[in-house]
Image (cartoon, rainbow, N blue to C red; front, side, top):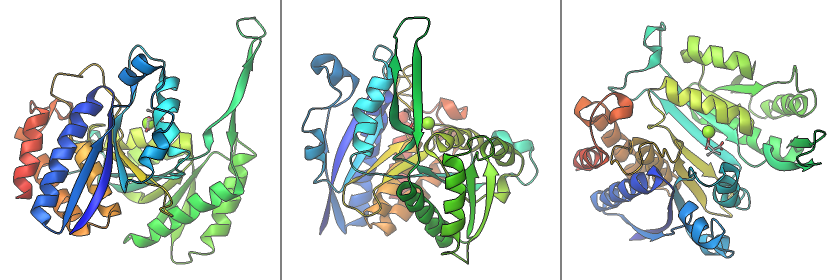
Length: 354
Ligand code: IPM
Ligand code: MG
């Protein structure tokens, strides 16, 4: 029997609740399939760990994660720890050294979900946003001088490398090519950002030549928000920089009905390091501990993880179970306008799996 070893890092806030639900569902998937087993090891890293130890994860954290087949991640962020510490101390501290440069964010309007697009003609959407996940605006380059003085200065420098842009373009073109419509939109802002973004456009042209069967176009990021809202069906696969895709993927999640549904994979496509899977919603301290967090985003994330592990049949079964759950209004959590609790949604998905 195949065994996949998963490191689970629930992190902060509702991360703990949704990852617990996700582990339950994943175990049910393995049981239902019968062909593979999942072995979990749980790591209590995050903001509580930080308050006890002064660091978000231990110094040998990466070495401990390295042997796993995948990482199942909840959320980071706490009201009493600065966000840049939680982010750089854990999430980016894993993504960047493990070279998880391709962040993949699928969006669909699942059955039974009410979308704010309901008044737009032809309002269906089936998108995958590819987010550059290793450099760009999140490169961490910059600094502050003359702190506290009137002449204080801060720089936040975006880094675009030919290697980094080329590999994410190839990844996005290949993904677009694998989907029925073979359609890619390259998001840019080369009218205003005349260095990095102009190189980004040039590399898009170069890589496009390797994929003659992919139809592609270029959109300025601001105009892209309008197109996503007004002409959702004209879009299929999207590639954008780290920050642009961060923003567009929140919009995508909202347009698909709720942040509580959207999944993410942080992929190291070469598989030199484990990839990391997480729902895109954050730690949501306003609803932490109430048992009402929507676990659907985590289940869809788990589905992406099963796919990555090569368990396609189990992944397909899980997606069907998720769709069966969203189609049932009795299983809608408060973010979807319902009253279902995390545990009820979880039980519903497990029942549908059987
Ligand atoms: C995301 C999140 C993170 C990001 C936050 C938690 C820093 O918004 O995964 O989209 O900006 O990358
Ligand atoms: Mg975001």
